[in-house]
Image (cartoon, rainbow, N blue to C red; front, side):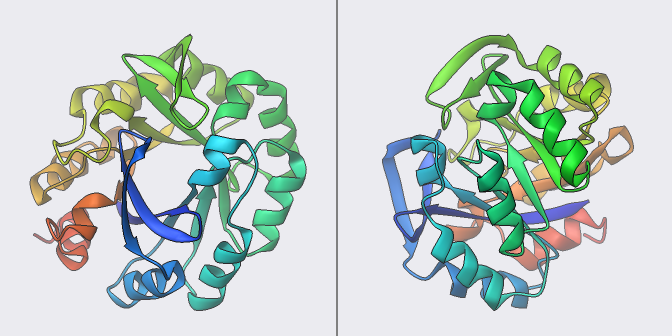
Length: 244
């Protein structure tokens, strides 16, 4: 299982939000590229980068920062947030992202995802599966749709999506632990490989997710717990490998 340190970008800074709310913002660094390099030095195998300005505004807002991150690291990274046009996806991949995360646009236009899968392949296009009360959350988590999240996951699998980042929005940034039951259900019933996100705050959480690896949980995203010193990245990586 792979640990993905999260770098959330807002107005060029590395921040964390609580439950995706822009007004609940904590700035952790004014140099996200240096943060990315630090995570790589600590042993990260991948990075998870989110353009929060893009997620809220519907168009990419941190291209220059993403380019700086790409220049600072050699490990692969994935990018999400505001990727709602073909040009946005092409640009981010051209910057060096190994894969992109499609969330809101996948809900509003499944045909868009189908086209991306045809153009770039399932290894480069992954689903941002954000849930609030069992329903899909969109527009930077601000809106809750009427679409059951498991139904949507199966729909995307049938289109050819292989991997999804599953986030329980209600847990994000609260350090209260992930929604393990929901993650397990998603892994068992969706047919997708699942990267767990939202609330991962202890080595015990990581060990619990590790036990779900045979079900298809092959990654975990960690943000606030790393920045607040609740978990050391080295220890998280060891736990994800079953070494601790």
